Image (cartoon, rainbow, N blue to C red):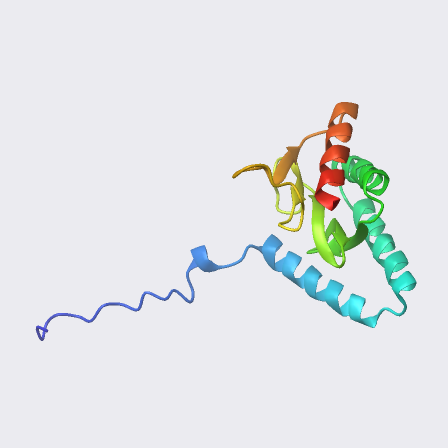
Length: 159
């Protein structure tokens, strides 16, 4: 190495703005930590289920008007289509789980400052169709036809 040549700079960016979490992402992580602590403090299984659903309904009530209406309708569709799925908060979002594992969730538009709400499915959802299938859907509003489609997807995902 030449005496005037400088060594290569360290490429591990510890202070790079592209590597940082957004305020919304940090907020979601903090919410998840609080959810886990609250879940650990809860008593019986029946108490946990009631408290989890109450927490989901409280989170829905905090949403902006359009998101709240969609989230309430989504909650009703899930309860009717797959009553075996248990409501719970997941990173501050209403979600529905089987055996403690999230199957589907509703993400409000304001959660990460997006222009639409999102209906998402985890890898625990039984939606496999060939080699490729959708795992999330953008929602601007919910029509009766949309609710029927969501009901069918949730039912399939839960089985």
